Image (tube, rainbow, N blue to C red; front, top):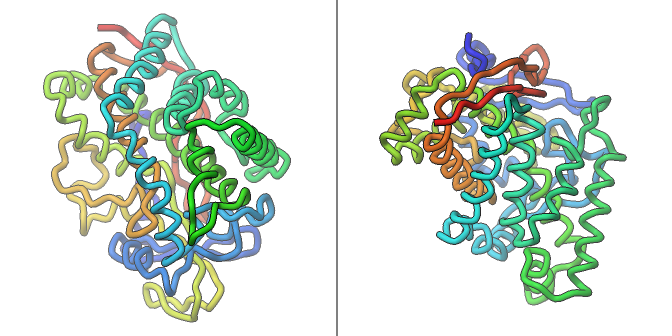
Length: 385
């Protein structure tokens, strides 16, 4: 098994009963596993809500480390639609040519550093800096601010000793509060300023609402993007011919971005809370209990995907749900797609091959199911063209 391969630990459960029950800090979760049922539940916001107690739809639950509602992530229609409308144009900025060019400059710098060293630890010294520096483009703030975020490490809510660390989370919350205060005092054109000037239902957003949007951006797009980048480096180490293919046929980068995120599914699942007693996969779900939409399992459903456990870079039909589904699709998807598209293209132009020297896999435990989501560390050497 190659270092980049990620198996499908949900296959037997998905095909036999369609769900699994896990305990999450004493608050059980019914994991929905099939592609059709995941999409159906994601679309049915009236029965399976996001607007529950802040932190409860996240798995593992974050109710003990925050009470700020992440917006628009933890809000349901019609309010969700109104909140999302305030920022959708901003999150389309990655599609602009100047944004793409700036992103390419950041990515080329990271590749240059990797090529200049005998070896590099990809998680901490490549993926984390790249994710952080690219985020400055999305927020429209100075590049040097990323150095603070890099100092936090790969997780904003986790430490080495705890999956959820309130003291570490408070570092993020205090930082965001400070940045909002600075934006109030000093007019500018960052996302902070955009939010502070936005109007929701004929009023300005409150500081707490702005805080909720910013927490979502910092937390939601960190681990996932880092996993996506790191897994991709491992994949190219196992499959150097894929770099040659993208170099020869640059348009393959477009389908490769979708296929790699399907295969890796950097976010395993996301929860919802039932507003009424119902059933999922013929299993009873009580009112106010939790389900989760298992994107990782849905993306390997062989009733939807041919050869689901294989990476097919030019896969034509690819209705993956790695960026979510329905009204709660990831706001940062355009940014992540553009980042990865430019990264794949630049790697194909500059890198002949990647060799993994050593690795420590990041294995998630969901009850009896163990799933590789990425790496705690991945040391590799990059060979130039």
